[in-house]
Amino acid sequence: MVSLVTVVATFAALLVLIGIVVYAVLIYNGLVRLKRNIDKSWSNIDVLLKQRQSELDKLIDTAKEYMEYEEEVLQKITEARTQAQKAETPKEEAAADEALKGALAEISAVAEDYPELRSSENFQQLMGRISTIEERIADRRELYNESVNRYNIRIQQIPYVVVARAMGYQQEELFEAPPEAREDVDISAQFAG
Image 1 (cartoon, rainbow, N blue to C red):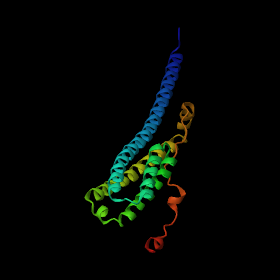
Image 2: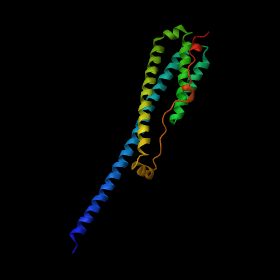
Image 3: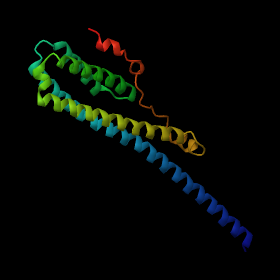
Image 4: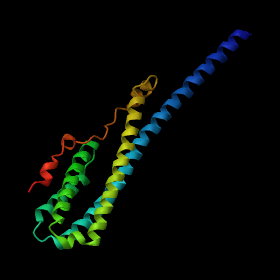
């Protein structure tokens, strides 16, 4: 005959084991949710980047109609757009984004020499849409970095670190602007000449 103490001890051990399994599942599910949030955040950025590419194609076509002698400027924006399309990591994307911003600034500056282009409603609308998309991309990058930061912190915390290591989860890369984007802007150079 099994004693009451043995039954209670077995039942208690079984409850503890079930509790550990349930807790491990909750930890795992939490890590999966954090990882998926990173993927979702990056996908949201990707959607906006595709919209921007579409608008840039239209902008280039519009500018070509007016800018007969500015092949170099149009070439720079085309190359920057291609670089942005090929970017796969946050670091590559940041570098491509800086090149694209520089090319857009240059096309805006050159547009000053073409009154017909500058006054073109289509050109103005495209520049406005690109500017709006750029703002939305910046917002999405903040959300992406927030998701990455939460995930990176969580996979280093106890007891999550145990499950994260067992599942092969590793730190994700934050989106950071390249060093040239952090340099001071020489305003006087913009007004010279």
